[in-house]
Length: 398
Image (tube, rainbow, N blue to C red):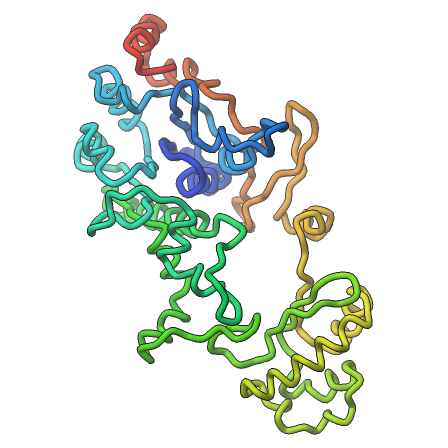
């Protein structure tokens, strides 16, 4: 039994921000109905592994365990389509969508209208730029969240060009912010009996994710300068270095532990150097230390460095690719990766990285086929087979 057992979620969203939020609620125990466009479905369905492999990583990752109903957004303006939404909402705890602001309102399905039908409804919406302002009506995506939210600027190295993060991090942060708002709204509802609207955005999430770094600008009136691969304004070692067979990221080494680290670097002559006995380094001292590290680390393998760094208490992290992560049994022990049964054979899926002792999270194993549960869900909501036929004739459901 999950923490949200008995809660019903209506997921109208596409791609990552909204679908991953709904998937997280599913893993917490909620029942999730996903509404999709007939013939195409969630846009994530058209992003394949490759031209030769039609499987859809984005859809699989964000929609396991949900039930799919096909539903044409263009026909929500029809009497049958709008009535269907209203009937669904009457039994829904949480509605999620990430349409451009104003879209649901144009269809007559605003928060105000739907909350009048179900005052307990938590209506969560994700956008690219926020619900108000001169950019509110613009379409965007994860990359625009990264660019306009400052992350591409912050990810550059050594004054180079802006760099896009290799993961859809703006979407994911938007998802987590949405889940946080939804859970808070459900908690508030327990004491007041009233739902509320929850708004999150990609740009807003990126700004909040960089609150510490951006506060530097608020305090100083200038942008922080990126130094090598370290942090913009935390002048510790923080350095990514190449070993004989891979890369290691160093978090520490200077300060009280410097004499031991100096020995590991084959520089016992520097063990008493006051410059490196300090945690915070000047740019000149850091550059000198980085040059020493860059010369020494390629002489040993990752396994050799792991042994000596761990033994010396130096904080570090291996720079791992996805294949290495998938092969690490500790990821399964912690539930970050889960082995599940699937109709196509046993699979590994991404687990939700939250552990709860009394109500453990359980990821779904199977993402639904497009419209797989349309009739099942409609019948549960009081429709007859004649009603379903009429809706299909009207073009509301696929």
